[in-house]
Amino acid sequence: SPRLRELPFDSHRRRMSVVVRQGDGLVLFTKGAPIEVLAHCSAELGSAGPVALEPSRRQLAVAANDDFSSWGYRVLAVAMRHGGEELLTTPNDQLETNLILVGLLALYDPPRPEVPEAIRQCHQAGIKVTMVTGDYGLTAQAIAQQIGLLQPAGGEGAGSGADPVRVIEGGHLDLIGDVQLRQLLKYRTRLVFARMAPEQKLRLVQAYRALGEVVAVTGDGVNDAPALRAADVGFAMGLEGTDVAREAADIVLLDDNFATIVSAVRHGRGVVANICKFLPYVLASNVAEMAPFLAMVIAQIPAALNVLQILAVDLGTDLLPALGLGAEQPEPGLMHRPPRPRQAPLLDRPLMVRAYLVLGLTEALMAMAGYLAFWHQAGLSWLELRALAPLLLHGQAPAELVLLQHQASSVAFGFIVFGQIGVAMACRNSWRSSWRRNGLLWFGVGFELVFLAVLVLVQPVAEVFAMAPFPLRWLGWMLLAPWVVLLVDDRFKPRVAR
Figure 1 (cartoon, rainbow, N blue to C red):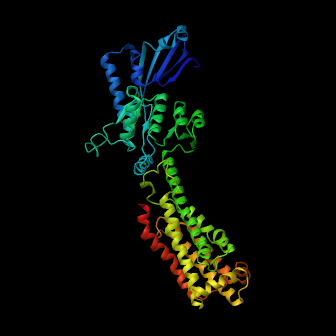
Figure 2: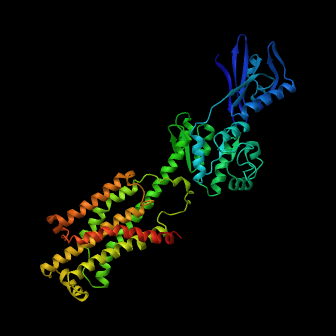
Figure 3: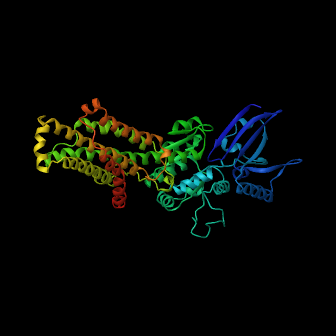
């Protein structure tokens, strides 16, 4: 029958009603939370028709509701009222009176099987999970126990410092002031809020944000829209969610799966971790590139690198390994770490010290040591090298000395390239980690070695970049450079972290 009148569901009334025509009269049907519906019932539907709802029968209905709810069922009470045309004009606050209880409906919507594992990962990652629902308190508690958010009464953890706060209903929340609510949220974990109205959900979000927390809210209904909008990140459900919730949210979950949020957090942490690997690698080579010019100005010796060779490091050898570090898969223990503080910068002091004073300085010292050692083996003393600097600068040096300068620059360039390989290994979570998980990094390392060989061995290219082949014995020393970088980094990493 068409609905002649409708009282839609209200989060305060916890019920909805419709008036339909049946035969010559009208019938009001009401469904909603059993406690609220029972409060408006004066009779129940028996086998022979309506009979008075005795207190014992009322208590039996309440007990049945609690029993089903304790198993995680959502229970609805259904009631009715016969009448005439007056049902269309009766004020709303008087319409749902003298109802006849028809019965209870128990519905079970089991949690997804992956949710308990997602909750466990959240707790490991230092993420507080608070359950906020409009369901009955016992239903909310049972579901929270099934997904691992609450410990079962008398189960493991009970009586051993377990959180005494279990389920807080919306009516009790109204009795708590804002200061007390913030204290509750700050010092209690694994909270469950039941029978919550939209304004109460919004109040929870505002209280968490007042504590400095980064708040993410999930929801699918119209009543969740204010909380979704007020949160730092709002997640709406794409399959079962309402249009209002999707419009208010920042992100729409296409699979309506809470575990997807946890997976997104894991990958988001992986992105931040990769940035913290990428930055030291890019910054470390700057010290090695700057050292030749500082030595030229301070010690008045020839520059170990020219501008084109520096560009070759930045745009040639460093580019692909840096991209490889940015494409690292999330580390196994990433979800065992606490969240980053909201104000924590990516370029913090430990990262800068490690990049410039540990990795970069080690690489620069090796490059300059190789450059000076090559000149020493060529038979030039320190004073002769200083005297040669002006001649090389103005293009007045003999051809054999220019060739030695190109070879010495190639040696310094080679130490920087092999040093950067060591930096790439050091910037990973563990240089012992399997490289098979990151083919791009392997490809980048191989590319920079091929690029080095082209710059040194292919004569037309070598002439452009002022480089030349050097004796093979220097290659053995360069192969030690990555391990020197790793040893120095392992030695100073604990001090830098402090």
